[in-house]
Length: 429
Image (cartoon, rainbow, N blue to C red):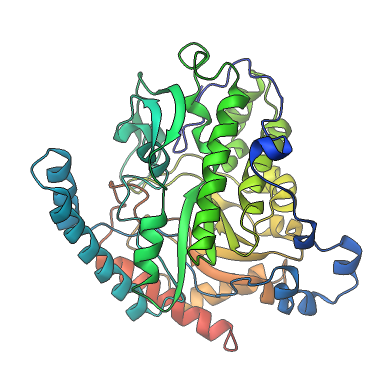
């Protein structure tokens, strides 16, 4: 039985299959104007449907070159983070170091030709850590809260990280600050490129609810998840108010269900693949619906930490329910090696979505060539129209402060080859 994973879904126990989303209580309202009727979509030729993505959503980001988001932290930033945590560096000094590192990584991306720019997630301990960093009510959080699981690699070896025993929500969640507003406003002020903000899928935090330790604060699992969703709904509304146009939800836990051992793990506890996907996607869509003027990306990978992975296999088992139900506009999918399976599941992507093919690996120093990438894109275009494709990385370069085992120069070359290949394959954008 698996013990954990990057997202840390944990043991759900005897959770009732009730929905935690009930209209106003969940803080969201469905916006029918964002949905095109199936009959209207079917009446349009494929190429027209794609070039008319703006018809589906007011300001869809159509960048052909993308990357998931996290970038390698420089050593001086890692040292400053440790000194700050130890009380050896004051807040102002730490922020100056943090700001400088982010300005430099923005310059790196722009010089590499990136159309989409992030702050590298440099202000975070991990890609999903900002929720617990910005609220009260959760105990036992340390770096292993984001790293626990059974990790695999034929290159650097397997590794098991135990889940922190004290990790649990023990009080009502109370927000002390927004998760990513500081990140976005700084990024917005330092680039004219498309500024992307990444946020964790709400169901990444399901494992924080403990049947015994959490019941005083949240008698039901759904009560807790409702508060998580409400916090993220407020977050995307604030980001939209600040001018964000591209937000990505990171949801690496769904592909874990392609692994038979993980499916059995949840099915033994009453959560079939269909039930868990339906429940999780409802939460994700509540967040997406809260910011109708924003393009949403949705990232699905198989685990990425310290150049290791969690599961192998194609998207076949989850493609239908995930690709069809999620209201995101850009699907960022992992396709960097044989673990990823075939492109066949891309046939199930609805016409109103663009797929960012994660063909460039962030796990190893291998730099793919333009010719190799173009060949793979051509293969994918036999399943899904070329105009509905873009190119990116399979995952982030450093999903936590524990980055992958490559160099900044490797990272730079990978971003450059993405930009050059995208310009070559889609010369008109």
